[in-house]
Image (cartoon, rainbow over all chains, first blue to last red; front, side):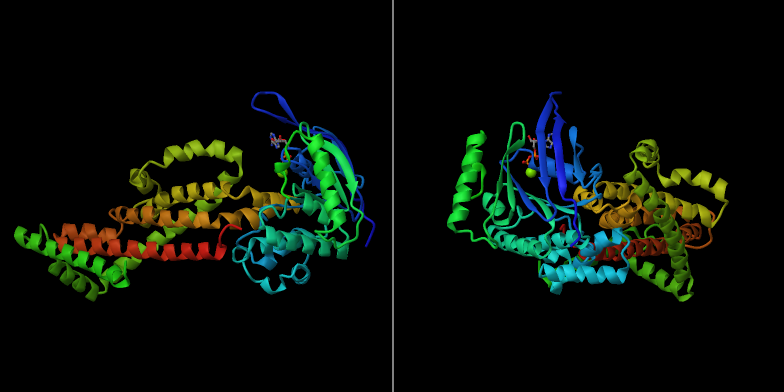
Length: 262
Length: 252
Ligand SMILES: Nc1ncnc2c1ncn2[C@@H]1O[C@H](COP(=O)(O)OP(=O)(O)O)[C@@H](O)[C@H]1O
Ligand SMILES: [Mg+2]
């Protein structure tokens, strides 16, 4: 795999205008580097600016000050480096599953035969090869999100951005989705920036967990998760790390523990 | 409702109506003023036998098809433009809103001056009746495209033209299909009016011609056929619309 740049947030601050006319500080002075092939989870209570940071990385929002770089390229628009996977999938209902996965390749001008082969390969990788000619509405939520991940991976993005991608999937399937995502990631070591408010999800997936706290949204602490993959959810080290994270967030934030899904 | 009831109820209601019609016409006692169902059937058989009725139907359907398809050919692109561009919308929306409530009949004098007496004014009336609903439904279908689809297009770096062709157009197709069906109803109504002047065939002409020769039974023949064809066209488009909807699937 060729060396790729990863993604870097350089003193990013984001203010939103409010109806009262006062600027609302959603993100304050965030500096963060995600190395090539690294899986980083942003974790924190709702309102701490996770989605805002991801939207800036995806080019959908502009920082008020600071910048986001992939290599030497500053992100000013979507479609310039990172590909975002959305919580509600965003699959096109009029296209078959395979045509959905081909979409990004079509945009990039890949010829039909190659497009088809690559889409089928990505679908096989997420275990949906048999559903290539189905339509999205015939699939379960978890399967739809796998299609949407396959669609993103098909274009081999420099950075994959995911904002609570399993938030709309039921708890049992969510665990399966996490396992599949980790397996996919282990095969290819893509650079992933993943937003979640589920601490267990973050511990299961991340190389590094970035804890954020609200008011204004900023980084409270960064924790490297060093134990080996695939991780065992009931293990002692898993449990110890979870306690530590919850405590940090509890001490740092004003939000109560009930904000978290455990 | 059971299947039998679904078939029997409308049949029973129709039989009741025809009976009432027959009784009322017999009371009136004048075939000219109020022809009974029997003489309407005979009149239909008479015109059908000479092949003239079929000719009238074909003439009306042809004019209607040209006017209606013309309305789609102009209305869909215009609706797309208005849906896509805020500027186009703010420029043209007031004009469309003023023109839309004007009955196509009001244009008839001008249409005959511009296009001469003959086919074109009738076609232009159908066109005028079809084009506004097509424009309006296409515009709102484009504006109602799920913003998430557009975010997906942006994250994959799709161009403006690519997004229109690959996302906006297919995403608004179900909405456009609804517009096409609404337009078929509104414009079919006007084919008759369009054919009442300056043409020598078609169902509208048949009505005027029958009145001039005091054949009110044939007036009713034309009326019944217009209704039946309108229903048939509407049903065909409903089927097409349902197909689009089914193929497009639920929101995903
Ligand atoms: N478009 C917006 N306009 C105004 N305020 C916003 C906007 N988007 C987010 N915010 C505010 O910014 C803060 C961070 O939001 P968000 O990034 O969505 O948090 P999270 O994803 O961590 O829940 C919140 O207080 C939210 O209300
Ligand atoms: Mg969020």
